Length: 157
Image (cartoon, rainbow, N blue to C red; front, side, top):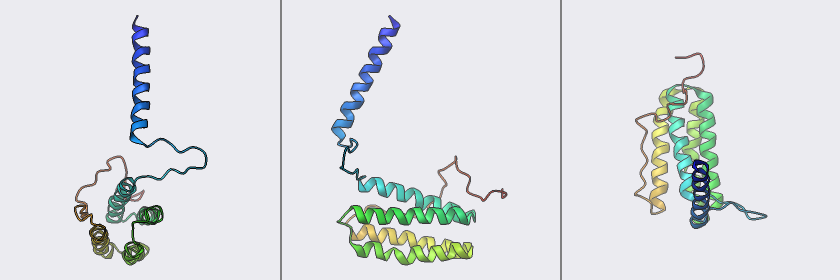
């Protein structure tokens, strides 16, 4: 009797999941159709890169910082390509802060990195303002939320 109960619960869970996916409109694309993530999902990914970039730079893990900066930049480019409503000028205004941080990372200059990270964050807010999304305000992170990742380079405490 217990087995029938488990099977019934499993079938109900599967049917509810299918219903939820169908109602959300996020079903996977089939054939030649391409999946386009929601802009908010892309921005959440970029926000994660923003946080990781800061903590990698603070830990002077320049390899990780360079990687996170590259991922952040790729996310911004992806958003601009996928969403026509994002003006090209918004993307190009982020070029200078990203390039400057890239140079600070290459020079392994922690003080310059910290200053430029604030400018990058201000650039994010400027973009949000220009898109009438001024209610989305970024700041320099104060806490490291990724307890499952080591930010100092290997061999450093």
